[in-house]
Structure formats: structure tokens, C-alpha cells
Image 1 (cartoon, rainbow, N blue to C red):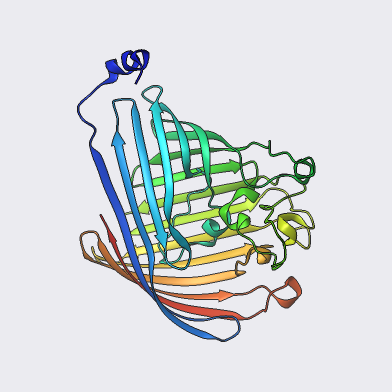
Image 2 (image 1 turned 135 degrees about the vertical axis):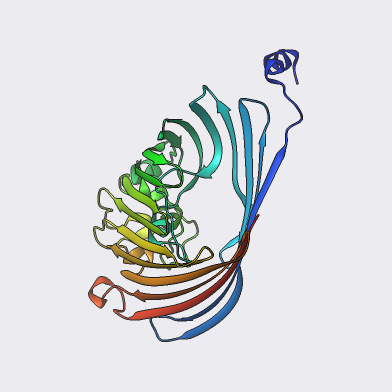
Length: 336
């Protein structure tokens, strides 16, 4: 460290940093029947997540997390950020993170379709603040999705961004709205496969023009009862040929999730969910999902849950099968 840097940091010096370690392990047993009537059974390590957090000094903190999901995500860095406090209510965060687009809460075992459409991990610069329950953030990143005009010029200069604004009372309610300048940067849309194995280079979801997206969410806790809902949507339509040719018509995908949970006892919770999507068949999402979950806290930090889900595919005229699929999932989760 240079002498100047040492002098700049010395007024903030505190005791040796303490590292907080948290984690989540989820093991799932699944029995499912797909749209073709084919049955499968499997046991997987659905999630292994480990997070390290430390306060370097009174203004600077760091966060690093690793994630593994069997058959879905190889073990690797999930998040890595530095946060600098600018004042008591404002901070600047830089690094790889889940951008604050959507809330994606669920009482189910499976992820909601809103998350499947909108979850976005990027390396960002983000300014955020909170005061008296009102919170907000604004961020910038260079996403993987490029406009066709940039690709034709061999350029990669497009900057995406978003804002999030909400109001919360801890453990009681949370309402908010989010905006992202190009929803094509979401993880799901960047992982689409056009089925062309001969294509030498994946073009990272090239679009004719950026397609902004929005999310609106609510969360209420009424004691024994919990209500949550969210709507995620593209604000404009994708063009024919977008996303490596996976868009064959002008599509404006959206997803909704509405859930109600009730605490039957202090340890036992029952919840039901209704989810629907529109113009999202090209993403591989079902048109409708009805599901229910019964969860029991067997010990502090340990929960066993069982979920029954029925999914309806898009009709044949929309490129689907028009059939139903079902799944039963039993999950043991330990959080520490």
C-alpha cells in the first residue's frame, strides 16, 4: 500500500475485520411427468450456497458468494461486491451481483416464473439509498445482449441500466417497482438455445433494439397469513429473429405470480400459488402453473417441504403442446 493510500484509510481503521459466513443447502427428491407423458425420478443437490461478508471499516464492506446447483450451475463465483458508504443513508456498490430488478419472493419449493424470466446477474456500478422505509437504487452495467447495429460494426459499447424504488416496513410489508433498460440481459434470455449446433459462436442474444422491462411487486405479512404478488414484463416487443433467432414473431413476454400462505401452527405452513405467462413460450416457460406447498420447520434453520405442481403448456398454435405436466418435489433445506 502506498503512503498516500495508507494515510487516506487510516482515519477509518478499526478492529480486525470479522467475517460473517452464511450458507444454504437444499436437497430435493423429484417425481415428474412432462408434457409428453414421460416419467422421471431424481434426487439432487439442488442448491449449495456459501456467502462471506465483512466490514473492512466503518464505511467499506465486502461480499463474496459461491453457488452450486446440480445439473444447472457448476460451482463458481455467484457474487462479489464492494460497498462504500457515502453517507448514513447512501452507498455505492461495485461488482458482480443480482441486479435489483424484481423481488422474486416465493413460498413454494420451485422458483417462480417471474424469476425464471427476469433474474439478472451482472457486474454493475450501483448507487442506493434508504431512509424511513423508502429505498431505491440506480445502476449501470455492460450487458451481454447487443443491438444488431453494434454487432454489424464489431462494437460492444451499449450500456444498460435500471432503477428500483420501494417502500417497506420490516417483516410487515414491502411494495416496489423496478425498471431495466434491456430485459434481454436477463439470465434466462441469455441462455436460450436456437437448436443450431453448427453455429460456431453464440451471439449472446442479439436484438434489433433494446427491449426495456418492468416489475411491480407486493409483500404483506398479516401474522398467520402471508400474501405476495409480482408482475414482470417486457415493456416493448421483441422483433422477429431476436435472441439468436428464437423469436419467430413479435413477442412481448410477461409473467405473473400470486401466492397466499397460512401458518397452521408455529412450525407448519401451507401455501398455494397461481402463476401465468404470456408470449413466453419461446423462453420455455409454461403458460400456467398451479402449485401448493406444505413446509415444516423440523428444527431451527432446518425445513422439510413438499410441493405439488401442475403446469399447462402453450397451445399448439402458439408453438407448444397444449398438454399438462405434473411434479412432486420433497425438499430438505438447512440454512446457517
